[in-house]
Length: 140
Image (tube, rainbow, N blue to C red):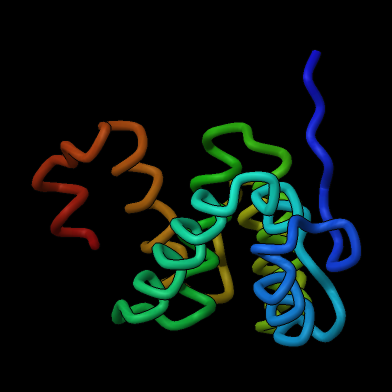
C-alpha cells in the first residue's frame, strides 16, 4: 500500500512551504492533516484552498457550514473528514459539545431546530444525490 507523508512546514516541498506557514499561523500553530497531506500535490492543495475560500463566501454561518460538513462526513463514513471537521469545530468556532455529539451520532439537534433542519436537509441531499423531493425542500 502506498502511503503519503503528512507534511509540516519543515518537510514540505519548497513551493508549498509558504502556504503551510500561513495555514499554521491562521490555525494557532496547527496544520490540519489534510493540508499536510495535500502538500504532496501543490495543485491539489491550491484547489482545496480555493474551493474553501469560495465556500466561506456563502450565506451560511461558520457553525451552519460545519453542520453541513460533519453531516456529510458522517454520512459518507469518512473518519478522516469527521476528525478534521470535529477538530476545526472545537478549535476555530467553539462548537458546543451537545451539537457536535448530535452530529457525530446522527441524532436530532434538540437545542437548535434550525440546525436540525439543516442537518436533515443535508442528509436528504446526499441520500437522493441532489434530487430532494418537494416535502424535504418545503421543510428546509
